[in-house]
Length: 470
Ligand code: P5A
Ligand code: ZN
Figure 1 (cartoon, helix red, strand yellow):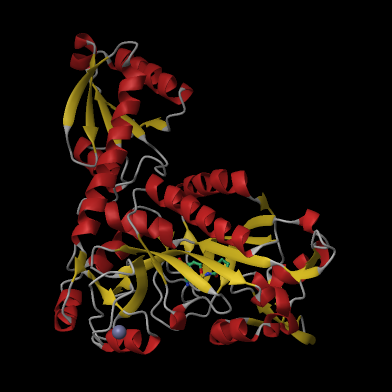
Figure 2 (cartoon, rainbow, N blue to C red; figure 1 turned 180 degrees about the vertical axis):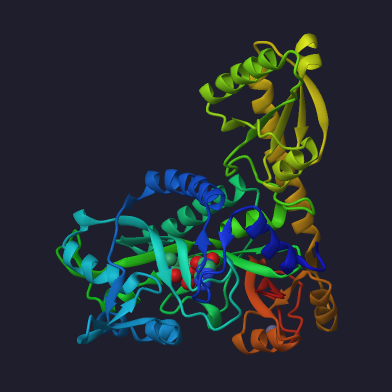
């Protein structure tokens, strides 16, 4: 799987009914029913967390050119990636309209109208929907798409820099919870100056590692300072009656998170879904013979009802196909737990359970504890996926003390960490060593550290990393 991960990934998203990439526009695919259910469960996790902290809104998909162009740094970062709408029917539009690549320039002009006084603050909103980026790098379903269909973006405005700083931490905490519930490991780094979000003061990024050793940025949290506030004239009257610009943050995640869960947990038999996003968490397979079929089916239904009542997503698979084929498709779809029940089991008052994550088979007695035992198993499956994924991830972090070891370590597929002085020039040189991406600094060192920068030998300020990236 490691050798031909790309092939595995493309194969699985088609055979498991996740995405059909054959839609005739490059970088845009169709969410198929099973994939759509996975995505729906993902959204539920995300929006439950988002709703606690923000209000949900919906802004238009189109942005007037004038607004998009207002923030110079921002537009410069996106100018090569914007799709433009230039016509309405036969008529040329008076002003070009951009398909939003992200929504700062749609949202902030409205913030400027809404915010008058410190009592209007903080504002914390989020929205989910599509954004469009004319990506020039190689597109891949979910990983790098031109319509980002599962973009969830938060935008906040505050009356002080301290409060904005706190919001950055809140954003990071929310994202940790999202990734944790999908058992997707991550490294959090402060992106270097030359790679921060266009217009941001600084960017905190989450990166995970794919089975092919490449890292993928799966979420970012940006402190925007007052840059956009100045551009869009977002001011408030503070408690002393003076007018001040607001302090802003924004953060976003996308389809990439779903891709990561699929890529990281999957195996050669296909998908292995974390229970949190599995459309079906438990599948019950009745083993039917002519004799006693009805009793077996009745018991299966009874178990199914008990599980659904306790909010387990469960279904009975009574398709009339060869058992081998059936098990194969259940495994391919990544269903966390398979229950088998035949006449002999029924007689012994037992069910057989088979875990998708490790293939372990065991028996459970059909009694009042059955539902809770099954739920325990689902939790165990999550914990096992989490542990396995983090163990592997941690093994791919390698700290090297000598600059000449960086290249080899990246080749081995590691996120390669080293001591860094923090200077841009130095960082860019290190990044050039093997043409790979400089992820940024993941840890600040104490002032009295005796560690030195791998490149210039000056006192190191951070642990930073480079890796092969998507
Ligand atoms: C934060 C939300 C922003 O756009 N504006 C609002 C800020 N940040 S970002 O880093 O540019 O994008 C946020 C996350 O979206 C994912 N992403 C993509 N996913 C799939 N296909 C793409 N083409 C794509 N581009 C960005 C990344 O995970 C990124 O961190
Ligand atoms: Zn240096």
